[in-house]
Length: 203
Length: 203
Image (cartoon, rainbow over all chains, first blue to last red; front, side):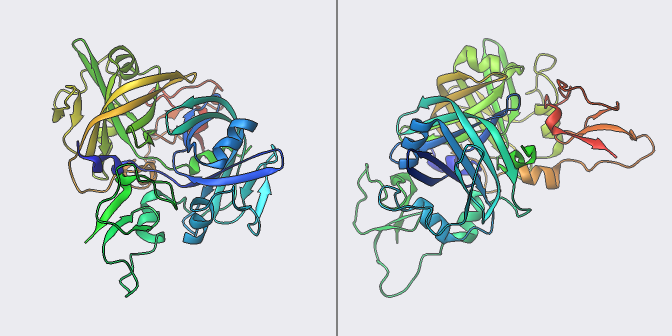
C-alpha cells in the first residue's frame, strides 16, 4: 500500500466549537462535508482526545466556522496546538454567538454553520457527528481555506538556523520535531495530535 | 438561514466504484474524507438512487479514484450524469483492477483507494459508508481536482446562443435548464440528481 495516496484527498479547514455548562471550546478540524440536502445535514469527525469532542457529546450541538485563506498560522496554533483544558481559547478572539448560543469566529472566516447533532458514530480514535444545520450565515467573500493552501502558503517553512535540530523526525502538520533516530510506532505529536504517518525524517 | 454558507465547504471530486456479481459501476462523489489513521479509515456518502450505492451495499467493497485537475467535463458527464442501469460506464474507459478486483480509473486520476466497508449509516437520501483502506496507490503528480476548481475551470459556462432557454432555472452543478417560472420544491435534476438548492433563476 502506498500511504501517500491518502494525502490526495481534498479538505477545507474549520473551527468546530461547542459548550456545555460554563465551558466553551473549539478546535481545528478538516472533515466537514454536506451529506444530505433535505434535511440539510453535515458530517464531521473529531478526535476523542479533544475537549471539544467531549463538549459536543455532552451538549449535542456544534458550530462550524469555515476558515478563509486569510487565516494566519497563529490561528491554527491557537485552536489546534493547545488544549482547552489548559486555557480559555476564546479569550481575546472576536466571536459571535449562533442561535444556539455557540461561539463562531467573526474574523478569518467565510461563513458559519449552527448544527444540532442527530447521530454519533464511534469510529475508534474519533467520533463522527452527523448533524442537522439549523442556522447558517455568510461572513465574507474571501476564498475558503483548503488543506492544500494551508500546506503551501500558511504553515511556516522549516528553518535552517543554527538552533534547528539537525536530525530527527518533523511533523508535517505543525512542524514539531522529535529528536531521535527512530520515531516510535505509536508516537502522537504533542502539539497537533497527529501520528507517525504525518512525520518525515529530517535528512 | 443563509443557505449559501454551505457552499463554502471544500471538497475533492472522486469516482466511487464497486461491483456485485457481473455488474460493475461507478459514480461521481465529493464527500470522501479520512476519519482515522489507525486503522486507516475513510468515510464517503453516496445517493441511494445511484446503482453504485446498491453495489457497495451488496458487496461491501468500494474503490475511490481521486480525480486530477486534468479530468475533462466529459468524464463528469460520463460518470455523473447517466445511470449504470442504462449503460456500462466502464466500456471504453481505461481502468485497472484493485487487489479486491474493483475498477479504478487509470487516466485523469492522482491516486486510488481500495476499501472494505465496516459500517453503513442511513442518513436519509444517502448512505454513509465507513470503510477501511486495504490498499492504495499514487498514479500521477497532477494536482487533485477540487469542487471549486471544477466550478471555475471545468464546467462549461452558460451559453448565450439563440437556442438557449431565456427563462427558467439552471442547475449550477451540471447546467441542466428547467423551463418554468417556478421550480417545484421537490424538484430533482434529471441529469445530476441535485435538488432545488443547487438551481439558480435565469434572469
